[in-house]
Length: 356
Image 1: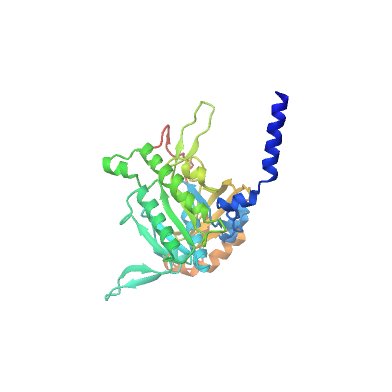
Image 2: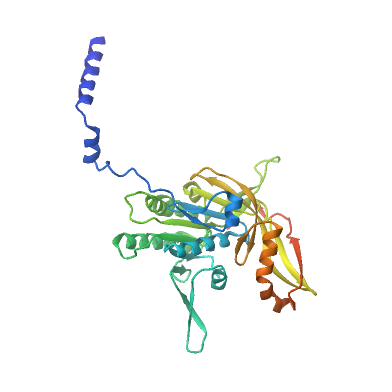
């Protein structure tokens, strides 16, 4: 028995001595497909960088911006779009929640032109971007199909840009099965997200990081959330993502805005003679997942109609000075008081399962 083992080992050693691994790799097409591009970032505002200790949005990755309503997610999304335009990267807006505001985007620096009719009424907007909403996209499958079609056009040479896909938001459209049955079934929707994105779109996005890809594509998604009840009497409530967890698993960067059980924001207002203008909100910000450089941080930031600013007295004073004239008409003068008003700390409704 020992002699047979020795012969087997000798035969194996002989095969290995004559085997050329590099030739095998070349034969199987595995000789030049293992290198990834150097990591590039789309920088967000300096205030965002100060709080998070990361430059912004990592290109070639899937990024989730999650949190309760009005906590800064759209501000981050627009900051990314503005920077993309500066770098000749094409922003692709997928707006299925239908709360989009072009004036807000322009205020933050997005290059958008108004199209007016003969009467001077604005009838459309155009610029260096692509835009689609619920008028043409009605389902999770529709969102995925739209993204994949553009990536295919890019590969054919018909769309010669790096693409920044910006979806607002996961949880705002159902799957085809839910639509056809006229029943918004969360399990069906989560299954569609897993199939369409986990097994499809997300793979195409991350593959663009390879050196073999002529373009680099990035997917930034706002994810609607809900709060789950504690699992035990001593447990804590949790923030859960609408649409299931497939996008969480595939994301390399997850940024959470606000608190778990409530928005956790405080309004900052200019007040004069009973009139007031809300010009900013202070909000908590946390990096919950970071598979790019491992940095996870938390802090507070101030969001304004023009983007993020640092949460300090100097930044607020500078912002007040820069925009006081635009508030004067509403307040009746440029001399006014700045007050901060904490929003209700009452928790959002909590559920055992994702609400319909």
